[in-house]
Structure formats: structure tokens, C-alpha cells
Image (cartoon, rainbow over all chains, first blue to last red; front, side, top):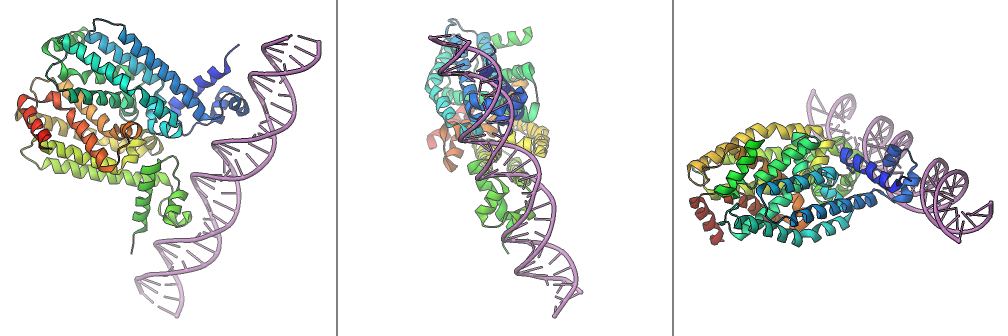
Length: 208
Length: 208
DNA sequence: GAAAAAATAGTACATTTGTACTAATGGTAG
DNA sequence: CTACCATTAGTACAAATGTACTATTTTTTC
């Protein structure tokens, strides 16, 4: 009936998110679920296996969010903002990966490979998006291309490690964290806006 | 003659930087130094003690870099760039702290307290710097204050986690990493520059 | 309903780790 | 010289962990 594998993944996700990957073992997860660790081991050999599966779930989530954006034709700043929020929501859900990114990639090297395989596609998507917004006179047209590329790297770092910053400094939970860091990420684009773009951004600001 | 405590700190720093804090124990460090772990324990009770001491070293380094900047009167973009490089150099030296920031603060809670105690002072320093650069017509004067504050948060996240990004994506070592990420951090300010500021930035660019 | 496969519980053991402790050595102040 | 303190080496042990394995129960399949 109930999918044990799924129950294991859910329990592991919760424990990893709350306590980190270094302190949680197969035995902890088994205890949390009131099953034997022998049983858990039958489904997933060790925590690294679970981490990889959860990472792939995250991966699928990202694909969905990226797809979603592609279908929108006439993009507005508000679409863009909502899209950022969707990304941060997903990152919040699987936050243990980002809170322990270096450890995760050291313990499960495949994750690094998978993560880096997105790269080119994501960069192109971003550049396309920027170009669209430039054409719509929302983004400035006097920014050299190496700065746009820099902005993409900046976006990666900010998105991937925003919640680490939260963990150390802000200690926001759930929706509040998502809202706060979505805003931080969105605000990064402010100086790239044209007068028209700024008006659009301010409208939303005063609407809240 | 030779300070054993210092030798221990150096060995620990090297091992932490290379292999991470979760895999390195008192015994590993002792083995690396060819001393007994009983002896090492006499100097530092456990790895967390060493981590805290190393963090305080980093802290002193930051203080020095910040002081240094305060003494400069007429600030140019190039000073600013050099200052960023000095920060990233220091971060590189103690990179294990940033590569495992969340773990570090969970294992040694004092670190979180110390880190957050800088906050107000650093924010004021940044705002002062921005204002100076605005007055010198290098930074734009049409940016609202909440965006400047946002930029400070952005700077924290970018500086603290740039090397995590390197670890996962770029795999640059030493000077190359420092140079690359200093540039990334510096480029963040490009859209905040006035025409005069851009000219200054381009000069440096073409000088290289 | 019997045979086969899947799932679960539990045991066993080598290894690592944190921690406390004892013993030996070496330098040094009086 | 010797008594004292700092330093070093090494031992001991409980707890946790990764891993492999066996035995039992449950479910599925024909």
C-alpha cells in the first residue's frame, strides 16, 4: 500500500534539513520511522544513496520551474519575480543540499557532475531572458556582455547559498525565508533596470 | 623553541582546508605531525577548540583589512578592488570555514555569535564607503537606500560563499581562485557606476 | 494454496571516535 | 640537586557507525 521507499525519503529529507547530513545515519532515519535499520538498508544501502535520490528529485523540480518560464511569451518583471520565488521555494524544500553543498558533492561525487551538466543550458536561458527584457526596455541596453555573464554566476551563488546565510544570520523559517531571499535576489536586478523597468518594480513595491 | 600549539594550528588548517572538518579528527592531525594524540589533546581538547581558535585568527585578519581601508582618504575604484582582493585572499586562507560554514556554526555555536557581532559595524562601514563613492561621482546617486542595504547583504553572501562555488564548479587553486572571484565580486558593482566610474573601471580593464 | 519473491527484524563484528586516564620524560626555579 | 610543572606517549573503554549476514514474516504469482 504505502510506499516505504517514499516514506524513507520523506523522513530522511526532514532529518537532513533539520540536523544536517553529517549527524544523520541510516539508523537515525530507521528509528524515526520505527522500522529496523536492516529493513531500511534493504531499500537504500546508505545515506549517500538517499542523498542522491533526493538530489534527483530536486533536479526534476528545477526542470519543471525552468520549463514553466519558457512557455511565457510576453515576460514582465512580475513574472520574473514569481519565477525567482518558485526557485527559492524549491531550494527551501531541499535546503540540506545547499546548506551542506560542499560535503554533499564530496560524499556523492555524481551530484557534482549532474549539477554542472545543467550549466550551459541554464546560462543560455538566462542570456535569452536578459535579451528579452532588454528588448522590452525593462533592462538597460548599455551593459557589456561580460557583465551579464558575471550576473549569471552571481545569481548561481546567491540562489545556492542564500539559505546558508539565513542559517547563520537571519534564522527565518519557511515562507518568511522564501519571501525574504526572493526579494534579496530580485533586488539584485534593480541597478540593471531602465526608468520604465524601475516604474514597474516600484508599482509592485507600493502594491504590497 | 618551536611552538607546538602553532604547529598544530597550521597542520589543522591545512587538513581542514583540504579534506573538510567532518573527516578530520584529533588523531588525524596528530598523525600528520607525528605526535601522539594524547599530546595533541593536551594542547587542544578537540577539533572544535582548534576550529574556534582558527576562526579567531580569521577574525583578526578581517579587522586588519577593514582598518587598512579606513586610513585611505581619497578612495578610488582601484583601492576598492584591491580591498576586495585582500578580503578574498584571507577567505581563501581560511577557506574551510566558508566551505563548511553551516557545520562550523552548528559545531561551535560561539562562532555564529562572533560572526554576527560584526554586523552593524560592517554595514555602517559599507554605507559610508558607498556614500563616499557617490560623492565622488563614481557610484550613481539615484539608487534608493534599501537597494544599497540589499547590496550589502549580497556582498556578504557572495564573499562568504564564492569559494563554495569554486569548490563545486570552477576548481581553481590559490591565486587563480582569488583573482577570479575578486573580479566576480568587483563586477557586481558595475551597474552602480556612473559614466565617470565606468571610465575608471575600463581603464583598469585595458591596463591588464 | 503452494512456491517464489519481497520486505522486515535483528544479530554480529571490525573500525573509528571522543574522552579520560596513567606513566614517562624533560626542563627549570630555587 | 631536587622538587615541581609542563609536555609527551600511550592505554583503555564505551558509544557509534558501516557493513554483511541470517532468520522470519508478508506479499505476490501462478
